[in-house]
Image (tube, rainbow, N blue to C red; front, top):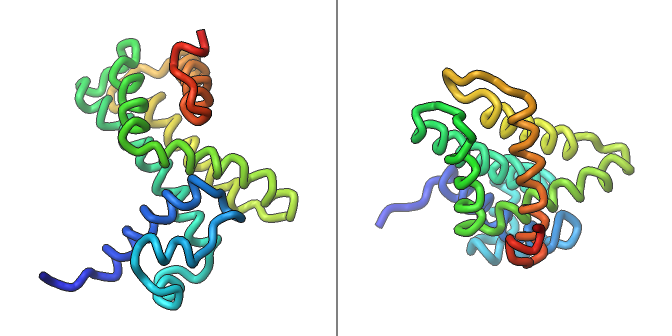
Length: 176
């Protein structure tokens, strides 16, 4: 069996970091916990990433990209059409059912924005907002689609209560 490349190890650290940050947030997660989860030493972790904030940002980027890709794949499977957004509407809960930490990581990112910006650090907010806009653009403008801003807004308005119910462990019907 061959050695794992630095890029593969880096990806493993990002996935492990998502799981750790999803549970305990940016400040509650230690780099030791991330290193232990992925089976590397802290010095090796810091050879891959310069600091914990960079790991957190990479985890945020990966979790939002996973969400965006789930929507993109659903649109591609539907021939790039947006008809009632059925594929995209189902793709997100499917992603969350198999990778629950993706939702929690994104929520930790939202929570970290206010704390970071209160300290004068806009970088986390910039990453969260850019990720949100990439997801929104994927839903709003799949290839060959007619954009309807109201329909896109309804899609997200309906999805946000589902995020809250899922994150708090309530059944989906509890919001009705």
